[in-house]
Image 1: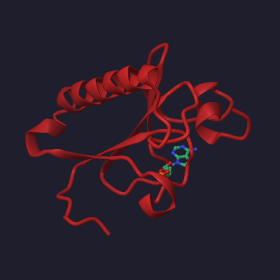
Image 2: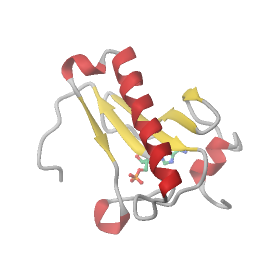
Image 3: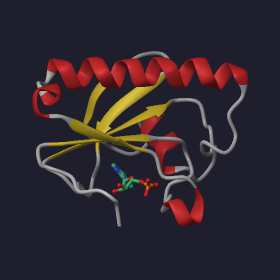
Image 4: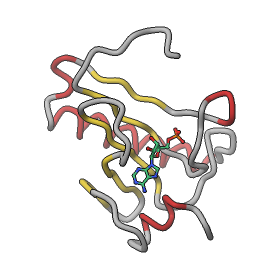
Length: 114
Ligand code: AMP
């Protein structure tokens, strides 16, 4: 997708601190972290948001969340816990319209979120 910053990261047209990649997903550090550990899990294929999920997308999302769980365990974030965030649309606070899941770890998070 033209002008999508995460598509450009997936295509290696702009740099990112990439931790994991396979044929369908990418994991990289958020450039503006809001926690000591802040990663983004994205499908390589452009999906705008959780608002538009096909049957095919749902199994891909399942695999992305499985990878997130494995990644968190490998790095020990499961010991104290972590937070998964998906922001959808304007009220949800979405700023990049390419589906992504935030993995936040390394501090205690409050509830409800702001
Ligand atoms: P959201 O507000 O949920 O759409 O999250 C978008 C996230 O993408 C924000 O946390 C940004 O800091 C992050 N972000 C934007 N541009 C980049 C980039 N080039 N590399 C890494 N993270 C980015």
